[in-house]
Structure formats: C-alpha cells, structure tokens
Length: 295
Image 1 (spheres, rainbow, N blue to C red):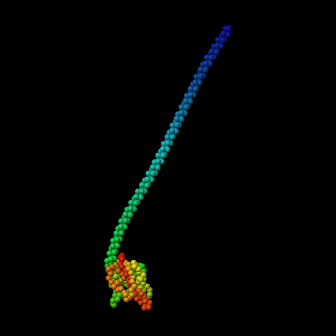
Image 2 (image 1 turned 60 degrees about the horizontal axis):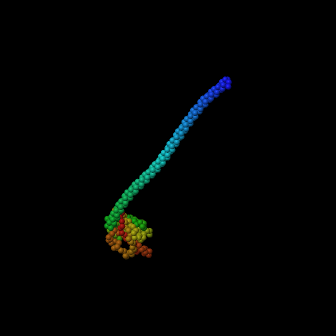
C-alpha cells in the first residue's frame, strides 16, 4: 500500500469515525427529546386523569349529596304528611270532643229543663188537687146565698135572664110571663142556686103566639148535660143533669121538688103533655140536677 492510499484510508476511517460520532450524538439527543415529550404527555395525561377523577368524584359527591337531599326532602315530606295527618286527626278528635261537650251541655240543659218542667207539673198537679179538693168541699158544703141572674144550657141552646117569682095570694106558685121571648124565673122562696137544698127555676114550653118558649127543649136533656147559673156575687154554679121525669098535674111531687136535700141541687120545671082538645097542658116535666162545680 502506498502512502497516498494509506492516507486516504486513514481519512476515510477518520471520516467514518467522525460520522459515527456525530450520528451517535445526534441519536442520543433525539432520544432524550422523545423521553421528555413522553414524560410530559404522561404527566399531562395523569393531570387530566386526576382532574377527571376529581370531577367524577365531585360529581359522585354532588350526586350523593343530591340523593341525600332528596331522601331528606322525602323524609321531611313524609314527616310533614304524617304531622298533617296527626294534626287532622287531632283536629277531628277535638271537633268530636267539642261536639260531645256541646251535646253533653245540651243534654244537661234539657235535663235541667225537664226537671224544672217536672217540678212545675208536679206543683201544678198539687195545685190542681188542692183546687179540686177545695171545689169538692165547696160543692159538698154549698155556696153562700146569692140570687141568680141568668142561666144557660149549652146542649139545647137554652138560656135567659132570670126573673124572681113568689107565691100568689092563694098560696100557689106564680108563673113567668108567656109572651114571646119571655125569660125563665127563679122561685125566690127556694134556695139560691149553689146553696144546699133544691133551687127551683120555671119556664114556659111555648109562648102565647105558639112559638117556642125558653124551656121548649127541656125534655131533650140527658144525664150529665150541664146547666150553668150565674149569680149576683159573680160566681157560676154548674149543675149536671141527673134525670128528667114527666108527671101528671095531679101527681106533682111537691116534696121531691121542694123538700130539703143534703146537697146543692136544681129543679127545672115546665109544662108538658099538651091536649089539643082542651088546648091545655096536662102534665109537668121536671129536670133534676146536682151541683158539680163552681167558677
């Protein structure tokens, strides 16, 4: 090998070595750059992953908080509903209690009123019994003397003022006037109506013109019918009919009509038994009654 060739060989070797050196330096430098980029990318990714994890954790926490809030709200709504139901139940119970109290108060008032009414009724009954006993005693014992002023018989629609009659000079009983509308009369020598004994009232069965007299319907009276006689003292003696009897003129029961009695009694006397041939009344009709009340 020549010197020139050797020098070229050394130059080529040197160039190759230099090229290799340069290439190795360059490759080392590029490798370092790639490592740094990868490290930076990994760090960025890790940062992103961390932020994503943190965001996910935050979302989870927020979701959990929202869930807890919903559960809490649900529980509060349930508690509120339960409280409302309890309040409604309490209000209803209070209303029932108030209604029961009102009903009890009404019952108490009604009981008090009923008790007062019962007491009043009992007092009224006692008073009625006292009045009845007093009336019975009064009826049994008779009234003081007081002339009659009028009479009325509701069941037959009879009634009038009362005249006073005495005896004629021959000792016979005078009779009331017979003109139409003439009143009945009281025999003034008999007891006054309501006194113990038989009080005697007389009246015509017809009038002189043929019209009905004040005692025209006397025969229609039945036992229990009422005869009322008003007296000058303002009292009204009430008699109940016992019976009515027809007598012939020659069978007049003087003692039964005018005789003494143990109780206050009344006699109503009129003519009866008209004889169209003689144009005279041949009988008398007499109603017997007994005092039953005074007012």
